[in-house]
Length: 564
Image 1 (cartoon, helix red, strand yellow):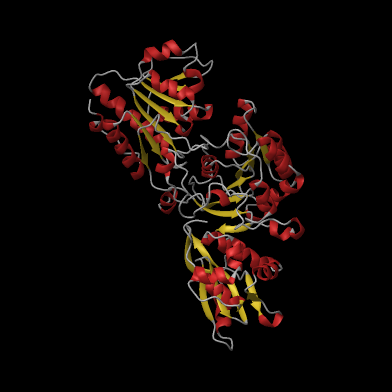
Image 2 (cartoon, one colour; image 1 turned 120 degrees about the vertical axis):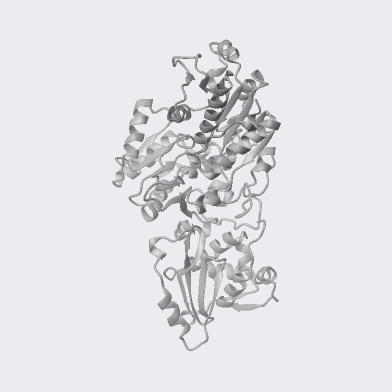
């Protein structure tokens, strides 16, 4: 049977799913093994179940026998797959632990850990599977998957994943011959298929970011759990978690990602002590208890689930309103799987709030940054595009601000809004702007990195945040976030960067704006504190002294850099 000619039943599919299904069938004409990349929450399970249904209908019409195996590595995924197969009316068996096995079904849902055990090997081999589908296929380079693929060399294979990326940058080409890419996350947000988000992060020069950057690396290539526990599981840092929740997400329902069981329990206890219905959950939580807690969470009886590596894959609760990252990681896949739990759309849900208390933004950019998945598929560690971030901030890179214990300021540990307009900055302030423009000196206005509006002149000016909608600037502005008045004290940059840094450090609000603009421009903060550097970046002649207003004008002329 010509696979690409199989009749496709697409009535219940969205456009991106229809296009992906057609590409899979076409690819199977040329290749035996294909990978599909689609973001978390965009319907991968429903898509491949629809594809299975088309195959079954076509083979049944031709009166040909067909055997299909669907593989996953977690019980939650297996249950989710089973529920979707049942929605399509597809009978199926399970190959999972001590569960009763029904090998007479043409479709089998199997745990990768159970498939090739001594108990099941003979029965599996007899099935002669014609199609093998692997869910969360970024795990499939493990030996168990390789052995399974080798057992059925003639089978058509499909691996589906949101994140074809390995921490060691290993290539997927030894299992999959080609990859089919979906649109980027930003496309799904713009087409209302994923929820928009606000993003709040620690500052790049904060103490916590320094601690993350200096954390020990385990043999896995990720940060050491033991070192993370010793460093971040203390009262002072945990209190920062609650402070940011209280400021930006108070009363909302959400998920917190913790380091380990002890860390999760401590966080849940802290939130409960402040009157928030929070529980800790991990892989050792008994199944019945876990299911009950999740049901209570979905029903709104529990507001916060603090988990350890449970809700990264296969968890479906669309009305999650905030995600809090309390666990550092070097894994792009883990980062996107975690924040992806909050991007599912739901009735009445406008956007999700992401609280990044461990500075993963400074490693991976925003969740909707365009990713070069083909490069990662073949095993290349390429720098991501818009907004570009290094896969890891080098500890010896002197272009980054070096933390100085003697200059530690508690205010510098405040979270900064990377994207979004919260209630505290969201009201229109046009009358305030007009009052500035009517002053005795001719006022000018210009945008800083398409995020702030500066209005005034060198003696008096104000800075307003633009109101953002779906990640794009509107013509409205929020409340004033910074005001400068020459009569209250002069503020002049000189050709001495140390002088500029010292006076800027005394004004935490302005320092925060400079740090944030540096992030938006993908530049180290230090480059905005040196007049020679500003002149070079903006294409102007260097000065020995400049009023602060004119410094901001220079910064407004700088375009985002390709690399940092």
